Amino acid sequence: MQHPYLLAIESSCDETAAAVVHRDGRVLSSIVHSQVDTHAIYGGVVPEIASREHLSRIDDVVGRALAQANIAPGDLGAVGATYGPGLIGALLVGLTYAKGLAQGLGVPFIGVHHIEGHLLAASADPALSPTSPYIGLVVSGGHTALYRFEGVGLSRLIGQTRDDAAGEAFDKSAKLLGLGYPGGAVIDRLASEGDPTRFPLPRSLRDRSHYDYSFSGLKTAVRTWVESYRKREGHDVDGQDLRDLCASLQDAIVDMLLHKAMLACRRQQLSTLVIGGGVAANSHLRREAVRRGLDNDVTVVVPPRALCTDNAVMIGMAGLQWWRQQRSSSLSLTAQADAQVEHAALALR
Picture 1 (cartoon, rainbow, N blue to C red):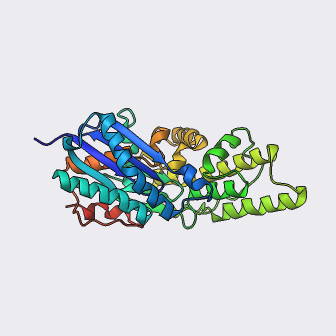
Picture 2 (spheres, rainbow, N blue to C red):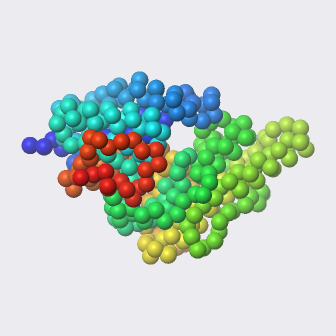
């Protein structure tokens, strides 16, 4: 008799995560070890350091996930892990660990596409679980893209950033303002006390003929304004000026994200928008998405904040769908830094 538990592992960037999900969809455990403090002094993720920390943490993280679920390795019916996209060294740690464990236990191994995980993160909550097809907006420090999601292996990329990701625009602007790394949460907090209309920052690619994004112009506008301010005032941006700039920056990013997302829903004739990725934890994006959804007759689904940033529950939700279809991956599956979500199914047999 096949055991009904799936262990999922995520190690694509700077979180080492493991979760156990039941075949019926219940989440039995979730453990995430964040490397934020390790990389903060460098102002961003250092790939080699990330890989080494994954190596030192993964056994403990997996052990804690199994203990929290109150099961032993021998109780597992399948093991899944992210194979891409992400940092190659980081991916290899989780992927190799998962393949070795699956082979040792004699259970199926399931390679999961990181973006599919984000698109399915909300399904971990039965009250939120959206029904496909829907438009998926994945927005983080490394990804900003729109997908038409019809099921695992059936996602189609319809638009993406042509330069910086939205989370990257947040982080680079925060670094410029001396707010530290990661900067998104700090900007979110400061923006809550600022005037989002004070600085008319640019909104690029408003063209309705496509669904692509561009955030480099916005980032440049912020840098130009900050440099001018420093020359004029003789010090870094602070006080109400800082709060208003954060609010204006945040409002511009959110406006651009939702402008194209709602356009995609309308053009694709779909009435559900699912938002995932680390930036989906932003309070203004969450509120504004719901408001615009009501205005456009679109149901907006956003996972709990804990499932927006990288985690293994989302990998488990995607892996579970493959497992239910009795499809598994070859142990020859390799880590892929730039894997396309449309190709996720091709690795599975």
